[in-house]
Length: 216
Image (cartoon, rainbow, N blue to C red; front, side):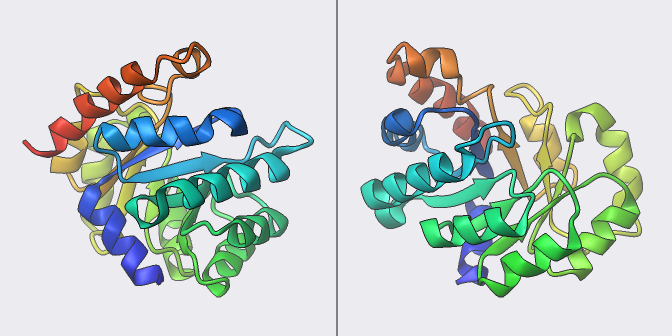
């Protein structure tokens, strides 16, 4: 299962990141993203919310039920063992994090999900990969710039990297052409203001703008 998920992410290259979307609006959001060509969706845990586990579990389950195998669904901001277990119970295909937590990575792998932890330095990237990460999320990628990526890709050219943070429609192609296997896009596509206003056609349009860049 893990290998199929990784192949899926690498094939479609773009993961849309849903942060703070209400569970009751999640299915409509996912369908709008799907209509725009998005095939991988991350539904995050809000660490500041007392109901983050319940909310994220509900959202993942609802989207999995609505879209089935049409979309690969991941849990995002998985920072604890408890959250990793909740993601698994909800049916998540993969789990992402902003940090390199070896215990959490190993738990995600043990549960059979693809692990996509966050890292910034060469040491963190290597440690995350050695702990079992399928893909390492370079975060925040946009802040570091492509020169940084080119420098670390020399000695660390065997680790699949996902660029997250600061990736937009103007530079997405640059990231993919310079050593990244995939990208994660959050509020540049999944805009809560549009979702709250019920403007799902605009979410679809934003998604299309990005997925069209993948075809170039």
